[in-house]
Image (spheres, rainbow, N blue to C red):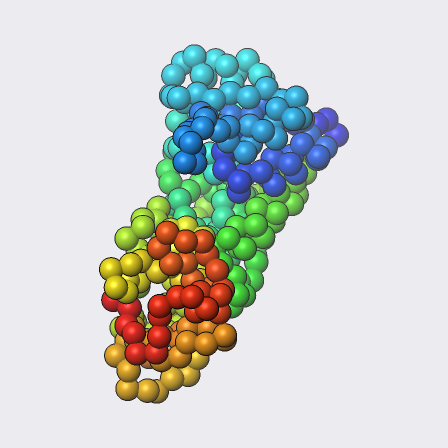
Length: 312
């Protein structure tokens, strides 16, 4: 079977396992398109996207357009002669002319079981909303926001200990293996496009830092999902003494005490137990303002939090 000529479009860490799967697979990656280098860190050093690093190591040409809607960019991609374009977290809406350029169209690796969680943050919102299952969708792209026909799906269970960080890693690996299966079926003309049921759709918009401010009046179970869904970014937080504290590794514990939500009702080597609107959260990791993330036990050795203190 003749190898496909693939142009890959992807930028962040999520796209790396997908790109690696393509590079190590039976088809040929003839070009990688990613966002321009960005300044990062305290020194504002210009850094390449992770996919660029992988592509250059493999000797694959890299394109980093500032505008993907120009005729010049379209001509550059067309000159590569792709059979298919594969997209995984590229970061911008693709124009119709680009989507329809390859003979086999453009397919996307999306981090949810569409039509649920269309948008920029499907993995995080699945956790925040307490879903027990998510998965990868390989989709034929159109000009809508994740509205194209479904080509192949692979489910993945969400555990109580999963965070956005751990789930990202699992989903990225699953994305790579599911994509290879889809490409094999594509070459065999064995993929049957299935239209999405728009009535079942929900959105997964980009997250903001403000969403991490904890309302302690909510039930512990709901906050447990929120903290995990915002870990590692933007993270969930509260304030005490004018200082911001970020919280990680939550555990729901039964608690029927009289404390006002947000009040610390236990602080020891096992963690920081905080009263909520129903039950309590036992927080195992904390990041005080201006410090690194650490075990609560380590913070309590020199920290200033005690039973009776309250987070606002």
